Length: 369
Image (cartoon, rainbow, N blue to C red):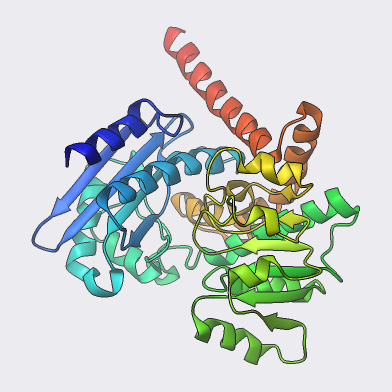
C-alpha cells in the first residue's frame, strides 16, 4: 500500500503529469463502490469530464488513469472553446458485475458533495441510462437521456468531430478536405467508431475495420455489403494494411507506441480514443516518419461539446455548429506546428496552456481591481 501511495503522490505532486487541483477517493462499502474523481484544473470553469467504469489491474493504475484523463480534459475543453476546466472519474471494477442502481446513486452523492467543482458525463463503461441514475443524486451529471432533459448519446458528435479532424488532415496533407477515394482504418467500432464509419462511407471513403467484439464488426459488414467496408482480424493487422491513408484509433488509449508506430502504413492518425500517445516522445516518432498526427483531445471534443451544452439547455444544432469548428481548430494547430517547428501534439498543448494561463491571469487581475 505504501508503494502504491508513494507512486500516486509522486505522479500527483512532482511529475509532468501532475499539477492537479484536487483528487478525491470515494468508497461506499455497502454497494462496493470504489472511485477516484480527479480535478485537474478549474481555470476556465467547473471541471467537466466523464466517468469511466473499468476493471483495472490495480488501484494504482486506476488512479493514474484518472489523473491522465482529467489532465487531457483540461486541454480538450480549452481547445474546444468551452468555459470549463478538466476533470475525470473512474469507478474501479467490472461494470458487468458491480454496476447497480445503488452503486450509481452512491457515486452521484460523491459528485454532489463537490458542490459543482466537477461535472460528470458518460465514458467507457457508463451510458446515458447510468447518468440518469447518477443525476437523481446530483445536479452535476450531464449526458442524460432526452427524456430527462439531457443530450443523449454523446458519441454522435464525438464521431462527427473526429470526421472534421480527418477532413482538416486531408486538407493539410493533400489539399482537399474530403476522404473520397481514401482508405481509412478504424480500430474499434463501438459507440463512436460505428458512427464514424457512416460519415466516412457517406464521404466516399473505403473503410477497413476491426474490433475485439466480433458482433460489432459483423453488424457493420451486414449493414454495408458490397465491398466498401472490409474487416481484418485485429489492430496489429489493421496498422499494417497496405495502402492505408488514415488510421483511426477509436478504442482504449496507448495505441501509438514503440511497437505500432514503426510499422504503421498510414500517412495520418486521427481517431476518437483518448490518450493515444503511449508516452512522451511518440509524437516526435510520428513526425520523424512523416505521419501527420491530429491530437486526440482536439478531434474527439465533439462529445464534450454536446454534454456541456446541457448546462445551458440542450440544443443539438447549436452543438453541431460548435463541433464543426473542430475542422478550423485542427488546421490552426497544424499551422502552429509548422510555424514553431514542433509536432502537432506539442502545438495543441501550447495553445491550450496559453488559454488556461490567460484565464488565470484575468482572474488574478480581477481580484486586484
